[in-house]
Amino acid sequence: MSIITGLADLEGRIAGELDALNLPAANWPAPVDRDGAAVRDVVVVGAGMNGIAAAGSLRFKGVRNILVLDANDPGRAGPWTTTARMDTLRSPKTLPGPSFGIPSLTFRAWYTARLGGRAWAELYKIVNRDWQDYLSWLLRMLDLPVEHRRRVTAVRPAGGMLELTVDGSTLPARRVVLATGRAGAGGLEVPDFVDPALFPDLAAHASAPIDVAALAGRRIALIGGGASAWDNAATALECGAARADMYIRRPVLPQVNKFRATTGPGYVHGWADLPPQEKWRLMVYLADRPAPVPHETVHRALRQPNLHVHLGTPIRRAARRGDRVRLDLAGPRPRLVDHDFLVVGTGFRVDLGRVPELADLAPHTRRWRDVVSHLPVADRRPLLEAYPDLGPGFELQPNHPDAPPELGHVHLLNIGSLVSHGPIATDIPGVDVAGERVAQAIVTSLFREDLPVLRDRLASFDVHELAGTPFDSGPPGSG
Image 1 (cartoon, rainbow, N blue to C red):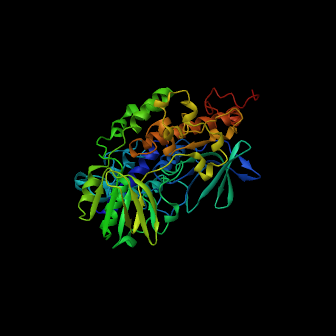
Image 2 (image 1 turned 45 degrees about the vertical axis):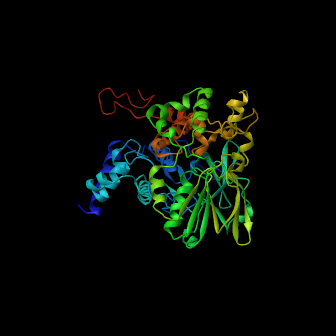
Image 3 (image 1 turned 90 degrees about the vertical axis):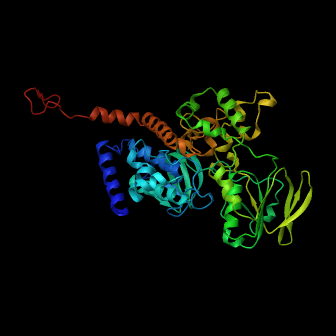
């Protein structure tokens, strides 16, 4: 079977399965206009896996007046072929992903249709490029209305609706889903000891675009011992960097990934309904036990002879010295060292005050610090307290009685949901559940909001079941 024939057969099977399931359902929300222009029921910001999961679930449920916006070019939504520099995904290949419970929409079905069952059996983990291509295929199979190269810079309350600023123009919507990934709730974390003047010519964040080819022949430094730092070290050396020095403050790397134990159905479906104190206890436990770098990533980096790992070596200061980066190292061997380039692998920050599109809503949004303020200092974690306390549908919640009511029309389907919902919007294992949960919440709220119109439709429904039988009484009042 050829690759083209195999994929064509799969796509034909998908069309039949969706038809048998009556998917997508017919559109049912009441049409709304503003100043004579139609208003979108939902705008999903982000066409990555979370955006696909949410938009696909909405469309299947008959909410079809939606729009998906993504700032990137087609085929480049999400980090998989841009800033994620690992060779393969971390997750097992068998996870269903955003497949909506339909086997023919899984990565396995797509991969097998293209390359055959033997290739699937021999596959260890999913290559990033293949995952990106699969997600692009899903967008097409689900017929999602996506507009690329569209950047949302503001989401504001507007008389019971939301008003988005998109590339300088105004777009009204009834609901907004921010499926904006790991950087979407506060951006990249850069420690205070790193001089901002190093960027962009002498430094870059590990999760930002980097011209790795330009690092050929250069001696680079990396801050951090997490997966992204190791990925960037390996990538730079593979692309010809002369040397890579990793400076890690911990004397010993973390060994056990506790988050792997939270991917089962219990955690995925049950976390969100826990009492707040139990959510907090779980999150503190996990945060106090950071995930280790995957062993595949370590082996990949260690294959490069010019990798040098410095454990127990915190950095006091990183600053410019001429055309080089000078690091002031602490630890058992305090010293000054110079490098040609610095990669900052210190992860992401959660701080809604730093999210430009939420500037008008962030001051009114409840954070976890509002929930745990009564706890003793030993049980507090400032970094976790900055996370928003989201509702059951990932919606923002108010921190005071006079907050704009439209606040709850924004659903945060990104890393900001971690404390409230567990890791279902941050990793592949729970993406299908996260998208379904957001869609169900939006369907429920739109139905409640549109009930007057839906009641009118109910009252006007007049299909005579007994037409053509002896018992047909005719239209009301005709007897």
